[in-house]
View 1: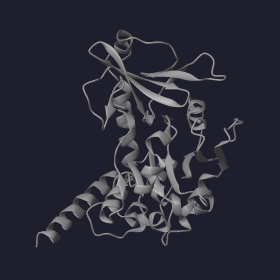
View 2: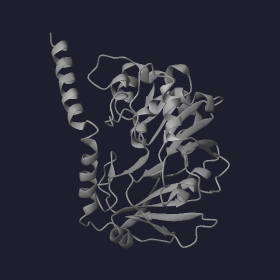
View 3: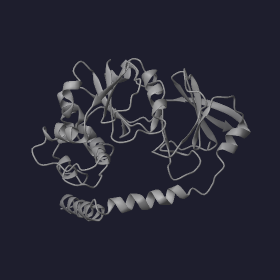
View 4: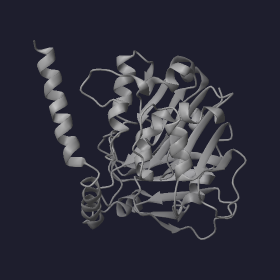
Length: 325
């Protein structure tokens, strides 16, 4: 099965972009289509295809398939348009069995180990998170987002008319899948790191093993966690760092084969014991949590957050009333 993953970025690239590229490079059977206006001279792996596209050009490629004027004024809002990528960028997707989208604030493991051809044969959409999802490359899945349902969750013609980020790529689109009986793989093989904690704590996958770090090793990603004083390992598909600031403390990234991912640093690889993992995960007051919350709301308010909250509330009440008659 041939897979193309779409990533986009506008502005200055993350400081660990080279590590993202390295983790993409090791997934040799997958093509990455990287849409950007960045003009830095970077040696891209052969399976990462940089496509120079301005933000306005991207907007117009999406607009061409929508019969009303869309609202797309900032790169972060593009997340809501991800379910439309299969339609907007279909000329780039010829010959692929699946297309998908992923973000740059993550490190990839061995993707094909977790989504084999056998799995792909049995599902039309794999995963439910905006930072990494796959869709079967056919007309039904390319146009799935156009569904004009009467359910209480968002429709595309509501999402595409507001500046407010509605998380359409990981909420409503999955509800539409269920509504349309799309074969949806909901298993999560991801380490999604909670940005509200200084130490590494996963969301969605909850267990008692909170002392944990990650190791990337020759294309494989491992969770290292402490159980009864012993270090255990578990292979995972990716670690999503939720845009948290990460210091690069790798001394030589030429011909890099492995590295450690700890709060909140990338380190040279080395053997680690249980006490070291515990020390990396000492809980501290994480002031960035509060500054990020304030910054988020300062941005959301002018984008229509309050109006959208009222709109969604009225929509849910209307739906509940209509279905209780």
